[in-house]
Length: 173
Image (cartoon, rainbow, N blue to C red; front, side, top):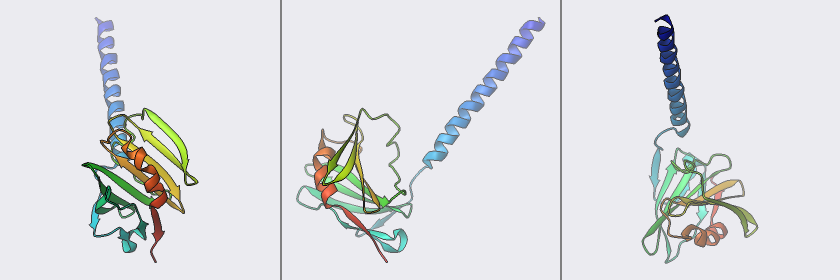
């Protein structure tokens, strides 16, 4: 009788410790993600007073059409694009070391991660077939992330040269 009582007590203690450990891990993960982003919409990608920079040039043609400009958390620019025919993608720009990645960007391991050069710039491509895909690069003290949550096959990679060669950010004083 006494042995079974100790056995039950040990099981209850193990259950309590397990639940506490799971809660700590879950709450810590939520803390790292931080919840929803604070976004401010702009009429053009000039975030001078708040962000201290502007996106001076980006692709803009009959296939790549910017339609919305955001400043996220006061430090990251996001330009949303319509890609003809009927696709969407976004370009994030931030000062070096201040990039904020979209929610869920690193939740799943990417099936394909590659690095290559475009116009002398090292580009990192992260891809999951039919799911989030992105390319990132850095130039002149700024980081860039071009991504799509539901891309067409090779859409982001196909537009990489256009964005890497034509996108520039600069400080605003």
